[in-house]
Length: 167
Image (cartoon, rainbow, N blue to C red; front, side, top):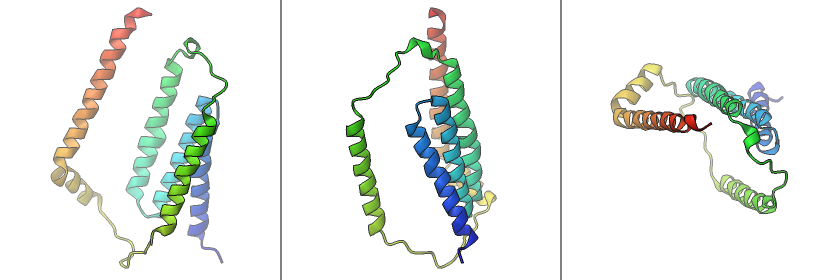
């Protein structure tokens, strides 16, 4: 008898791979954004199956919600008619070969890796411990990352304001 967790893993994996294929294979960018959302939901499902509830929550909120919404807003606010529409791509055979080579390397690496299950079973990490680790042990890298994001946001605002008057 097949275990329910294995069936759920296959469903989440199929959703993840199907969404990823939809992202790279569709020509409509809005459909690609929704396929990205489906792929991210599949990854969140895999996190849930691995008992990583916090990562699943972050995956849904940050990637599933915020990133896809930002992509859709960028598409709506961009004047797409100003760009030329390419219907063919002469580089796709080379790209397909490179993708197949990378896929082959990944499969070979996974096949040669000896994966062992941890003896202790599931290890629960409390949110309190995660918060203490993030803001005590990793306080400096956390603040550096926040400053980098702040500088990027200010740079984006300056770029938008400087090009806003030339329409």
